[in-house]
Amino acid sequence: RKTVTDAGLEDVVVGIVGNSPAIAHQWNTGLGMVFIDGGHSQEAADADFEGWSPHVLPGGVLAIHDVFPDPKDGGRPPFNIYERALFSGSFVEDRARGSLRLLRCKREAGHITKATGP
Image: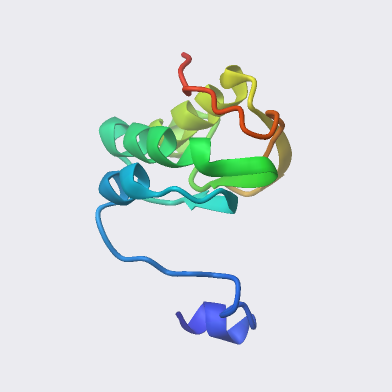
C-alpha cells in the first residue's frame, strides 16, 4: 500500500485481498494490467493465469514475476505460464527486466482465448 501511495497511484490501483481464483471467477471488468506474483506451485500459477489473463484488455499488460528461463535460477511455474501466454497467441513479450516479463495483449477487443499450451 505504501508503494502505491508513494507512486501516486491510489486513483488507478485497487488492492484486493482474497483467494485469487475465487476473485478472478467473479471478476467482470477488463483490466489494463494484471500482475501475477503469487504462489509458485504449478497449480497456483495455472489458476492465476487461467483466472486473470482473459481479463487483460487488448493493448493491456500481463506482468509475470519470477520468470527464470534457466531452471537452475528458479522454479518453473512462472516460466511455464509465461510460455503458455506466448503460445496462446494472445500475448507478445513487450519487455523483460530481471525475472519480470511484461506481455502485451494482442487479441481483439471482446475476444477471450482460453489459455492453454505447453
